[in-house]
Image (tube, rainbow, N blue to C red; front, side, top):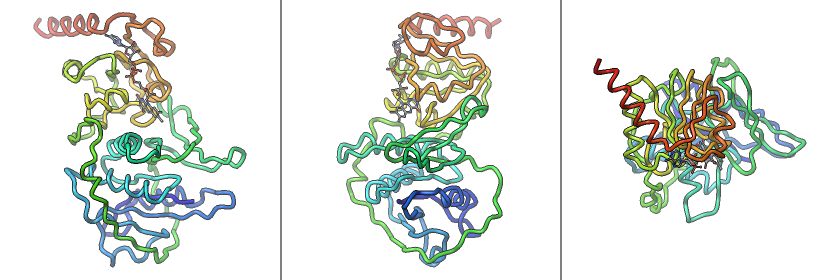
Length: 328
Ligand SMILES: Cc1cc2nc3c(=O)[nH]c(=O)nc-3n(C[C@H](O)[C@H](O)[C@H](O)COP(=O)(O)OP(=O)(O)OC[C@H]3O[C@@H](n4cnc5c(N)ncnc54)[C@H](O)[C@@H]3O)c2cc1C
């Protein structure tokens, strides 16, 4: 049974996040199974990695790509497809909220294989449940008031919330070192129109007002109009997975099980059906306002205020009212 930790080195050796992630999976009790921990690094010299608390190291020194996110996703994809791990843990200082959804989409939409993976951001811990013979990923929902437990059917890619710096010492080993050369098809393999742009974190999880666009918004232009309006009223903008898959918003705006869990005072959901993986990301909001033109949409089961209407009727009214107020 293998677990891959996408980590990084700093001047002291393993970064704090990477070290903590190894601690979090190291004692995962796996019935009759030996746990092997692999460390996945993007850039490393052999001399820096010959004594580490893991069994193998996979070094991706030669990846090409636009940016660090893009390269990390390629490394994860290559490692996942060739090594069949149960879990991949992303323990990087930056961009985890972009890397995980992007890697999930890339792996799940690649027609060259049939493997699938599920993603979970900011988990609390993982454990092995003997009764059902499955790994359970635990993640805070409802604004951190409740822990949700997800059983993993096949494999998952996760990140942890790292709270307190642990003083526990991990035993160093002489890991097997693999310098990996990715196959050329990775360079030609595109994610369906997903925006590769890198934008700084926009405080989705801290905002009091979040506007979330669903596929019902209809186009990238329409999402941009709503995002512009949202910015003017001080709201953060998020999207459902379908919106992200269409490339209408950059991937780090993804809300839901695979993306951000939000708990604002007000969450305005426009044109989203209310699928469970999405609901898991917004259910901690104090007030959910939903606009959907289908009166039977599941989102209304969770909304405090539901508006059955073509969203354009409502948002154009909101935008006009806001502009009028601004002019006064
Ligand atoms: C393992 C796994 C993980 C997943 N993780 C996530 C996740 O983290 N986040 C996530 O969002 N999804 C996730 N999904 C996908 C999820 O299951 C849904 O497919 C997705 O949330 C649906 O997005 P949507 O509501 O935008 O689109 P749809 O389901 O297509 O809904 C569009 C809605 O818009 C409405 N609509 C259409 N036109 C208008 C209009 N003019 N005005 C008003 N309403 C209109 C329609 O009535 C419909 O209800 C995951 C799926 C899996 C299998």
